[in-house]
Length: 240
Image (cartoon, rainbow, N blue to C red; front, side):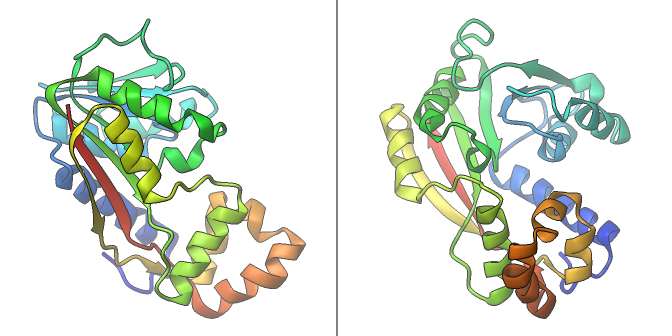
């Protein structure tokens, strides 16, 4: 991982490496059948696909096709398009699309914070549990909102002020237990990605908030002063 990253390309490399480490940490292995909830632009999809390999299968679900072109470009860039199937569907209701006991593992990466309808969170987790095979794993990776320094606080504030939905860990844990998953646990995964304000401003995902006059006077000045850092990630795991 990189500290004090001042180049957007190096930030992209560091984030890709982070996602790969997270995918291996949760137990994704070669040859697995994996269902990914909320694939977005495909940043985590690529890491999953590279691990499951040609003998594996990856089904990536998203209700929106807004990022589909970028998603497909990412797959082509890393030459993994042959092992990924995009599923245009609502993750809260996949019964007519994906069978029960279908996947060795069902995963999501920073999906819950993106929910437009936060009330769907328990339904999505129930679907994840339904799709997993017996003794299969359900793993949910979310950003921790416990900032330990100003740079982490800036990152969390940016996403909160962008309208992201963050669930308190007990709510996710309870939803997993209500979905009848066993051995439900949560662990922290440390990161070391600390980047400058210049890189923050280059990131398209930050531009809309950055140029808002009110935010620029408050959060913007803090980012200029302290930069930004990825906080820890929270890995929620359960077994069917």
